[in-house]
Image 1 (cartoon, rainbow, N blue to C red):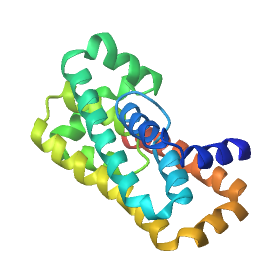
Image 2 (cartoon, rainbow, N blue to C red):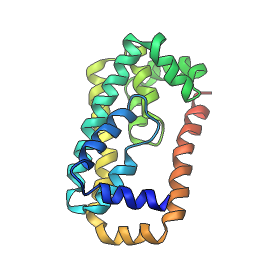
Image 3 (cartoon, rainbow, N blue to C red):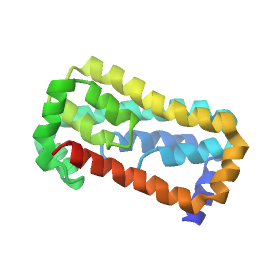
Image 4 (cartoon, one colour):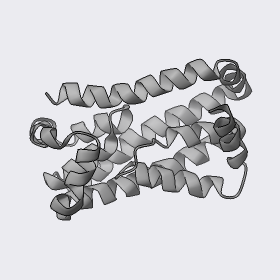
Length: 193
């Protein structure tokens, strides 16, 4: 894990880093399981002065990927959408997600966009349940942007100090990040009971 971390930090300074960040953010918002925060953090650590630029790239990629997720749900739910939900073990909870949309509309997307809850599940369901697309885009932009720009601000503000902290407590932080990620999936399952 440490070698992967070091490799990502090095990769963050290459010309391919921003493209990889965009693609990861795009894919995660519609089907891919690994959140872009991992690469965003690595890149912000490597070059704290570019943290806000990286957050903007991540936000745009995530927003466009969320739109793809919406259109998967809107037009390809049977062919693709249910397979993605099944991968996350949430196919049986599909109607409950629909109920959340009926009660909270786009707020459900906003909560999933900012928290560790799997955003992709809500983007696909948003399309399947035909929530208002302009509202979906606006709430996704605000929630995902808030999440990524908060990360950018932390690394821009604390730069080298936070890098030293992460280097010192890397193993513990990796465990905590994994717990948060898994906790997001558990929270969705619990919330959708």
